[in-house]
Amino acid sequence: MEVFVQTNNLTKWYGKHKVVNSVNLSVKKGEIYGLTGRNGAGKTTVLRLISGLAKPSGGNVCLFEKNGHDTIYAQNRVGVLIENPGVYPNMNAKENIKLKCLAKGISSKSYITELLESVGLSYADKKKVKHFSVGMKQRLGIALALVGNPELVLLDEPINGLDPQGMAEIREMIRGVSHD
Amino acid sequence: MTKMIKMDLYRFFRSASTWTILFADIMLAFLSVMLVSTNKSIQIYSNVGELLAAQINGGMIMILCAVAVIIFVSGKYKNGFIKNIANYLPRREMFVLPEIIVSFVACALYFFVYSICTIAAGAIFFGNTFIDFSFFAIIKLLIVQFILHWAFCCLMLLFYILTGSTTFTVAAGLLMALKILNGLYVLVERFTHFNVNQFMLDSNIFQIGMYSANSVYARAIVIGLIFLLSEIILLCMVINKKEIK
Image (tube, rainbow over all chains, first blue to last red):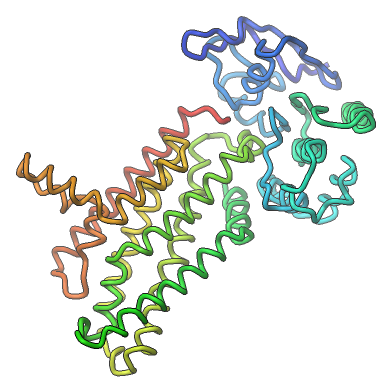
């Protein structure tokens, strides 16, 4: 089965602090892989390194069995939600998703509606994000990560701020996406 | 790349701040000309070209353009939306190119609307005879000033990307637009006997008038283009080194 993520001795230094120390992991197609650890253990940094938001100080990341310069092109197949959802508070949910659709070259209007429905936000599509609760923002962040049906989705604490029902829904949704 | 430009332009025209600044732009143009016209004791300008050159030299339009660009760019980085799209472009440098294009659009919008409103206000408050001017001279003035203003916007973009601080960038922009840095240039000239004023972006914006010599115009274009090119190169270098947060 195709290996979607492979890290080899992935290391990251911030000044004199080694925040990621020789991480080796392998995630195959269709797998749901979880990283657990104490606060400050470096989980987010590992995700940032895999997604290309940060550059490793040592080791390397292979995405879709491509490494080196080719990884840059492979990252186009990755959807990310890292730390807080990156959304424009003065825009509504639809507009936020439309922006990412424009970046991906998706022009279908129904796609945005379907995506919002899938994360349970269809009722608030025209509400400005600044009026969203933490959980709603998290759902919107997940929707943004799913734009363009990425083959690999990196979610950093995706159920942060969600109510128990929301947690169950998002876990179910992640399972569904993984099967698709 | 074109998709990123489309995305950035969509956000620029959807943003409430774009239209608020445009409203301020129009109001400033009309109100400042109205204020000038109320001073009947001295006839300062003989035609609208001189008035327009003086209004642009005043630095108000510099402030508006800079504020628009800073609001636009800081929105993308501060809210973290950049994380959603960071992996879509094969090269980091490609991030700043759409922003440079948006800064061009923003600068063009505010600069030319301000100019047109100033001319219209001149006709309203000074009478039709006041707008008897050399069309070529005005176009020359506007093109050169536009290049300088766009370079100024890109400088603000560079300051923001470099420092990540809206406060620092706004403060730096205000220091330049309010001619406070000119004092520093005078000091440098006093100690080094080198006229640094001639080679600075802000000084060139303040120096160009309707009847400036062709050599002054040529120097301003060269300075503007050198600044633009160096800013674009520096922006690409900085964004390439920076981690996206």
